[in-house]
Image 1 (cartoon, rainbow, N blue to C red):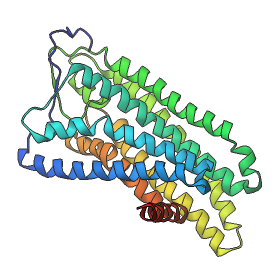
Image 2 (image 1 turned 135 degrees about the horizontal axis):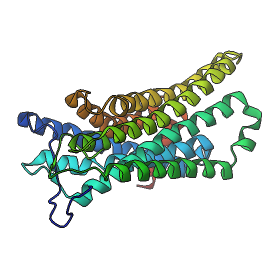
Image 3 (image 1 turned 90 degrees about the vertical axis):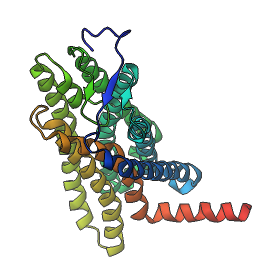
Length: 312
């Protein structure tokens, strides 16, 4: 951070819930269980999407991207979180904290953009079904995925680098489970009003703009679905779109709460648990939402398991 002598700086202390040590083991078990579910759920979606030829469609290409993103997103923070909850040592090295900051921001912003891309895919599928495979050709799919990943990286480089300029004056205690911008702004001893303004501006852009596009596209999708004559067709369209909408509201709801409320004035305990929610819970429930509501994924999974049993 600005003015810190990195060779002598011993890193940060992630406070987490050190005020309530009796809860640490309960939280450790809950987060470990969630992390295992996240790994299994997201790896299953990636595997099934690759191995089943019927799932080689734009929708599952983007869903695999989301699963890869969720795996990286949760892995960037959870192992360190578990380490800090397990014993009395709550430290994270300076380099570890900075890496976590960059990666977490990169993947979070990428998910914002990727959810817009997935809404566009659903819009074309429902509103332009006859031209779907022509519009959503492999080249465009790869380009849209690249825009999401590179756009997220650009956001991370700007926000993280700007946050790292803040003077710390020897402060090391991060009142959170992980190194992220609002917690590090609170740690600064100088004037943080410019940082807060930039944070709010960038976050407003990365939440308001994508969310508006998603909601507008779903307005068109709803109109198109209501014109479908068969009840089965309507139900299928609502199911796939409903899964995406649930994920959108879970992700954007927690991100808006964590990043768009004033960094100094929002309740820190609630902020900590919101961070926990979108770093642990959301990546875990995304695959559950998509698989439990999706007949194609369930059918592909059963086929894969049956094939596995036959080979034994």
